[in-house]
Image (cartoon, rainbow over all chains, first blue to last red):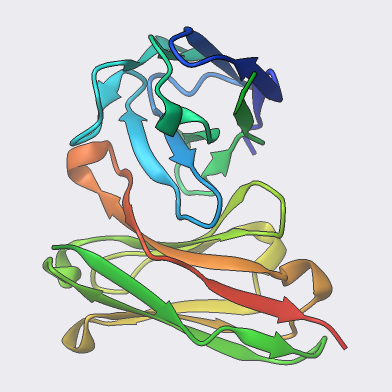
Length: 109
Length: 120
């Protein structure tokens, strides 16, 4: 099973600041990695797929990069609605299981 | 508008059974792989199972193999998860999610979730 490790666990930032979230895989997942945002009491929302492609309707301030084992989600300038938990997920292996990282909470400083 | 609506959650004793349902609308259900993903209280996400468009392929996370069964009824636009021999560690919100080929086969739509609590 591929293990995804996210860092940091918590990121304390102010609106307008840049957020950089990391996801590291225990083995190469090529570019088969996605990022999701989850707010309290809500289902996750797909932000980025295939490492760097924004999902439909996702603002341009969200960007993804990386390949192989190291990936980054960048929020260029935090808006108030961006404070949430972010998860990475891989689906490089077949058959499943697909796995998620443990999450990074972006909180207001 | 794509909608996924789960139902069937509730309180069940250890060793008991529960059947979750997910009603899909707003898209051609029979054209998509579908998945169940769960989230224990205060914890992260865990993929549980998925099923091919025609039901001919099914995959499970190891922790539920032999206990959970995923199925679908394309005529009713519905996805199911039969959960047997439930354990305390199965307590979670269960989401159904659509596997989207247009989004790298990641989950582009999710339901609102249904809570399963396994406790005596």
